[in-house]
Structures are given as C-alpha cells and as structure tokens.
Image 1 (cartoon, rainbow, N blue to C red):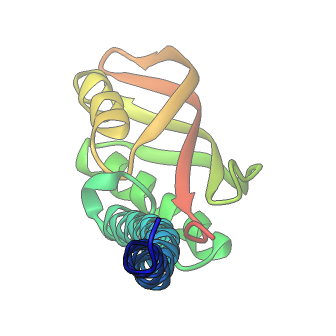
Image 2: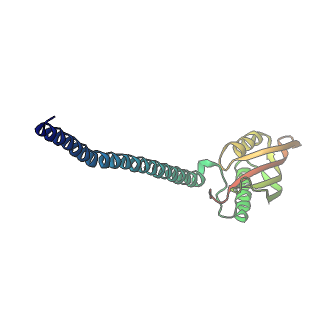
Amino acid sequence: MNATTRSTVTALILLFALVSALLAAIVVPAYLSWAENGRIIRENREKIAMIRTSQNSFIRVKKASDQWALFGSSPEAGFLDAASPEEALEEARLHVAALLDRHGGALEDGTFASGEPKRNQVETVAVDLTATLPKTGLAPFLTEFEDSPPYAFISAFRVTQRAPDRVRLVLKAQMQHLGEGPQ
C-alpha cells in the first residue's frame, strides 16, 4: 500500500469516526430526551386522570348533597316539616288533629314521642293515639294518614264500635322527621 492509499483509508476511517461521533452526539441525546418526554407525558396523563376522577367525585358528592337538600325540603318527600325533634312532635300532633277534624273525628288520647334515629339522618316520631270517628270517616282517615305527606307507617290498629255510626280507633304508627343532611 502506498502513502496515498494509506492517507485515503485513514481519511475515510476518520470521516466514518467523525460521522459516527456526530450521529452519537445528536441521536443519543435526542433518544434520551424523547424517552424522558414520554415518561413526563405518561406522568402528566396519570395526574390529569387523577384530577378528573377527583373532580367527578366532587361533582357527584355535590350533586348528591344538592339532591338530598331538595329531597328533604320537598313536601312530596313525606317528612314532617320541622327544624328540630321537638318541633317534629308538635307538627305530628297538629297533623293528626287536623286529619281527625277533617274526617269528623276527635282525639281522645294521644302520645307523640321521639323514636330512635335511623342512619343518623331520619328521626322517628312514634304515634300512639285513641280517637273516635264516624264509621264512614274511618277508611278515608286511615288512607290519608298513610298515603299523603307527611307519611305515617301504621304498625297496628284496633277498631271497636261505640255507637251505631261511631267507632273508636286505637292506633300505633310512626312518622319521619328529616334531621341532618349527609355529612
């Protein structure tokens, strides 16, 4: 091999080494940057997914809270409309008296007592009453007592005849008062 050929081979080897070094200097950092950007993008997507999940959860909780407030304040919900358990007792007493009056009856004896709260939100009013009603007013009274707001759940009742057209009703029931909303 002569000197010219040797110089050409050396120049080619140096050129190849220079091109390889230049490519390595460009490709390796570009690959590392691309890999790092991919990792950052994945992390950010995960963070965005977590944020969206928490936002959706918050919206669901807020919506449930709003719906609960609307439900509790709606007369169709069937709860006694009172701010406290004591007011609920008085409201139940007034409701029963008005129903009896509307159906031609009279309250002989009535006990309205606070019952056990259910699920820390619904408070029970236990109703024990004795009343006299016209025979024709008994069925409408019982129907309206159970089927119109504020609803009552009759657990037991006994009817005895007092006169040809009057009956005595002994009844046990529960009415509900909405306490605190969901926490």
